[in-house]
Length: 167
Image 1: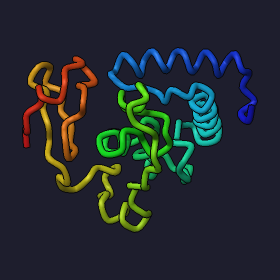
Image 2: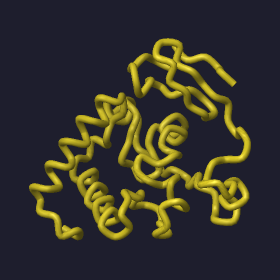
Image 3: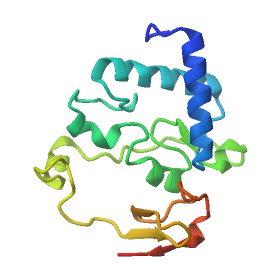
Image 4: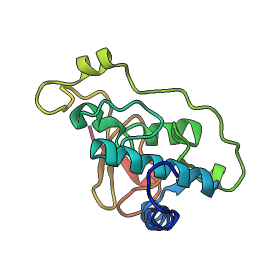
């Protein structure tokens, strides 16, 4: 225990968050102890910085600079699509969950500080131009900007085949 949180508090946080994650069509790693250690580290970052920064990346302590690494981070879906797990291993695909694929090392996608500064404009961290296509769920209208649509719509839970390129 590194956060000063009791094992009961971490257990409750785990079960509450797991329900929410699964209701959104995502999955935690099947290694429950590993997940609880990551969640405890997220709680440490929340106490330290006031927000739930990814425990596997160095947070600056400035929320605006770290918006992209607040869990779930901006890179989760890209990592899941390409590697079947996110960078820290908290989130995994059904293939890893079911034992059909093994977890592998995930390369860091987060740009360095200089690159992030070039990407972001000065009005609150909004990207100044579209880097990715925008996908629209034909069922509920959910929009997301990324290279590929999500495997499952986080709103209505339909599959990626129900998305169309919007922009």
